[in-house]
Length: 324
Ligand SMILES: [Zn+2]
Image (tube, rainbow, N blue to C red):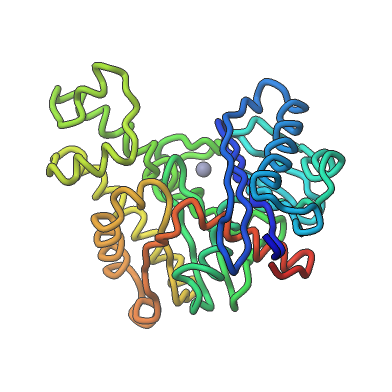
């Protein structure tokens, strides 16, 4: 291999994924390993350094070919100081991850919120290439969002802009992980939808996914998508209600920001995108102001988990001025 690359790292609650990538060749090597960050933070940092060094070996790169390591963090952080504010799934709070990791590896370390990285990936390498003012929404375990304005990622005054999941969608609604009540995430994330489906199946002792309750098996996006295909009444009802809530939130945000592009992604959209996009679009269109609605296109991300991996390339260019 002769070119220059970055290492993009996806820090999940249960696994780490490290990929070697550049804009010309895409992803040339990847390693995925289970992790237990909650047990021991020092061991976690060491395992991050190890997977990074191992993936460099795997791609047969020289040290000088690696221009940056970009960490995608599921939580709040400061990309300038490299400190994680709060990453609930990782069990990390006020954690100076950049300086700790920097001591163990010879490459410049950058950190960014994983949804922001996804938006950068979509903007520079995905369906958002032509977008100037774009909202990206990832719907899965939670609901994450990121904003691009005039072609640039908008991070806000303390780097937490884009938190569409914590817009209040129902006064006095269900309790959210953030501590408030009635957040969009507490109503329309996969977690919230699954809770409603389970409650109704228990009540009615019916539904195509009823066997999941008996076996205590987790209902994932794929099972929801299959139940939609089988026209299960309960699943369709709760997914449609969630799509309405999401569409109404998107209408409000479009009136407020006049986006030209809204990109939807995340596990639930990957599994049930066609069904959901149609319903989200229609709820949005019937609630948005005419001129704002005419200007905006709603699209499916299609990049999947790779969006954030690609986003690392844009982050390295922004913070280090390196082009790979
Ligand atoms: Zn919330």
